[in-house]
Length: 70
Image (cartoon, rainbow, N blue to C red; front, side):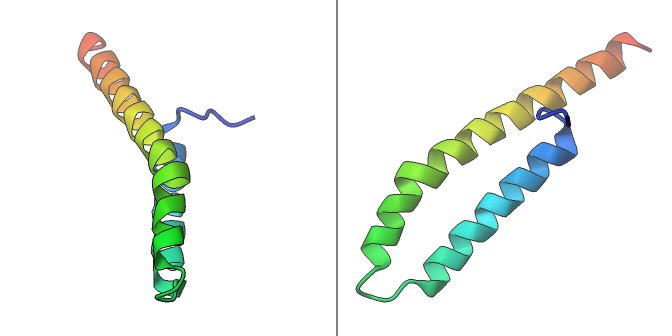
């Protein structure tokens, strides 16, 4: 099983979600645009926020480990 806090894994998941958001917005018609935007706010934004927090934490831990191992 892969480490879900591995920095490249987190960056990849963030990029996937950002691409999905861009595709959804690009494919939205004027009639569906508000629904797509609402779905993004409810579903994608919280996941992106969570992943960005985990990425920041993973980077911070890596920097701390690097500092302590000098």
